[in-house]
Image (cartoon, rainbow, N blue to C red; front, top):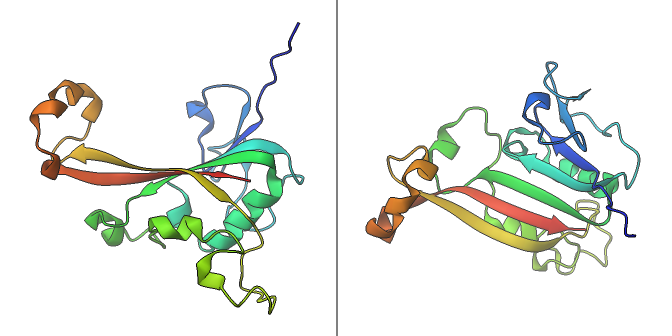
Length: 179
């Protein structure tokens, strides 16, 4: 008989009340998460290679040092583990207007989370201390679109075929990375 292995999931910035199962550990401030921790303080309070999956949903853009966050995620993620990230799309005007967004991310930023990325060409040999100490592989990159004026697209999804493509705007970028 095969045993069903449960994944150990960490939700950075997650809220305890919104968890879909007890296998998810949420980290937040202000008593919102299972674990109280400021994600701008390093290291995170977890052992190396302790999670199968890490979720960072609409949090990375609010943190002071996103590269350092990703290095911590690399440290606590098990081999072959997955990081699921959702961030506001960088071309969305409100992304720049939000005073709590410290960073905007283009798609290429995630491809550069490897020491062999073209952006670092010639620097690896010099052991440049600025090169991230991680080696993520992008396995999914998706832009989520919604038409102008619809806040809850699920309620009107049957109308999608009647709305021209140029009416849609990208609201969110979803990225999956593999260790």
